[in-house]
Length: 554
Image (spheres, rainbow, N blue to C red):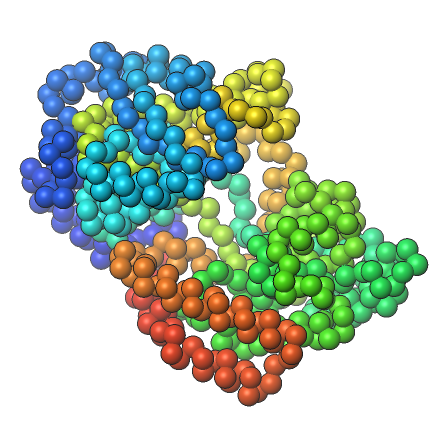
């Protein structure tokens, strides 16, 4: 499979994986299925990754059906809380899959709110499904794969043999999007889920072009000029309604998704991240809140606050509140995912345009990576058959029917081929009960594949264009913070880091509010920096740095 250096080389972990492959034993064969003392007796017959001799004979490696005599697989399926679905056995795409493959599927549908409880109880009971499908819910592969060995490793030797569609789409990319699936022991325990978009960052900046035109302003070239534009918006009745007091030059929230204060930090050279750490140009993990750029950002925002250029409700408002205000259209500048199809199309989307900040800006670089989509448990006696079934789910027409509904449907759902032979969705609005899995299905569409078969909607094209503009302007982070999520940490390390992260996030949020409303002095800044000495921040950074040092970054 073609991979650039973006493919994460987990040196120590991969070495362990190679040694494990060279020393296969009755409890763990080279075909990739796991056994050992942690596995229940039910899994003994599948320790070779293919079930008993009779199951091997009842299997076609290519073509359909997958099995000559019907078999049944039990599937634990996680779905979003907002989804109302018909029984999968009644879904036309599932019925066609069963007829095509010869494999009967028994589904246990679990809502997101109940997922973790029922998943943990299931693993504790020793009575496992054959397959877990969970693109919108989580399965701890470190705990249930690496430690307890209740999940079967699904490494490339297995997937390349039994999943040609999946393998071909991975190979077509410039870098392997499935490196994100590697666990701390070097194994992959899942098949990937991915909806590629060809994007490189989360939020962009937008400025009210109508207001600038009305006031005769030119596009600001730096932060100082941007501040002057804000002042003009406030003082000169930018919206022209005769009321100079209802304009909000800068619309953000303290902690409000893509409209958050953190998304102002890139203008000060700091790529925003929820972990409050970032990777610098020398591949070193830096603690974002103690950087000089962080202080400069707080001081700049304090100026906005004291001059009433910043929404006075910024401290308390959430994302929904910000979106309501953007819909009203009286914002001069804000960060957001894009303009179109954001719920405020009749507001600022009509008056605003992309703002490209000055050199030295560093936006958080997003790498499009697969997330964990499906797992096979050690109870499964039909591993090759299951992998072929998963691959059949990824066939283009089947996959889009599972995600959007039936081809050429007339009920407001579904999809069709357009005049260029590309998939075009037909969904016209909310459906009370869906006869398809929606985004809960096992969808695998890396960027190049999606681009070749899918008719991109207007808003997706818009987002991609913005990303290209920022990339061409040299405003993107060199090494993505996504590598921190890919770092080969053990379950214990992740749990320890999670506790530290919670303390850091709470402390940073509280002090940001104080800095913006009260200002920053040398004393308050030094106290802020010193506060982290007792919060195990050094240990937190060192853990990520040690893991990062085992990885090859593009």
